[in-house]
Length: 306
Image (cartoon, rainbow, N blue to C red; front, side, top):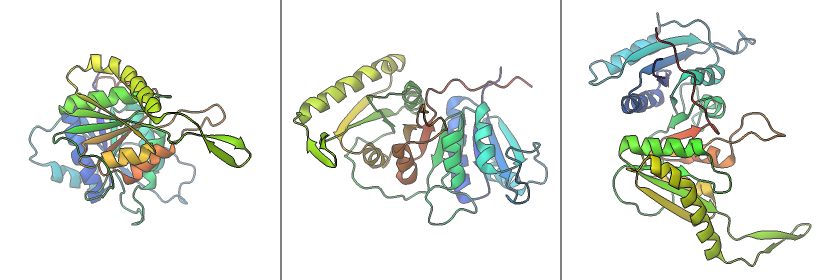
């Protein structure tokens, strides 16, 4: 069985070339091939019933030719594959993720509205793909807050102690190990706690904040312990704080190599794939690349040898 590729989605924009550089580095770290994909988008009104990619093709594709020129002469390139397909990117890209290790794309490609921080194709891929999806932001994005950190490579992961996802933690530990980075684990808890006393009336609960914080830290350390055993070289830094998890993760993204967040579990009454508000906020505002991990992700399908 062959090694699953890292897929870089390109469209000729500067955003997609930044994503390509990130994917090239990721493929090297994972010892995986790099598959460069250009989805040639048709007009929605022209082919309304087509939702998936057309036949693979790399002939007469100026975007893929641009990529070949861009990568020409690069040292230590992994095994390269090029794929040009026709279809709606928002549908095609998630489908391609079914046979990928990672799917990497820029925060906004050609045709995106200048006011949007994340294009619709990126949002669709992060929401629907079966593999983890990495969104690489434009440089210079400013974030507020955060606490001083030691210099050096750093991966950040969000941990919800009352609803943890092992797939998200496993990917975060793996990426930290591959990068020789320390792992900052953000575990936020609600404060102040409130309860309904009467319709429309909230009252604070008489609970000690230190007790809530200590319990959150204890739960986090217990959830992290098995992953730390599998990755003994990764230095783990739990960060437990009150308030909004999204705000803490965005603040921690400053100067981070990567922020890792889970997507969202399907609920009984809402079976469609979806992303939680924390994940969406991190995608929209983080200063570093963000990887969105499907809940309880299983190993994607391996490709047969050619």
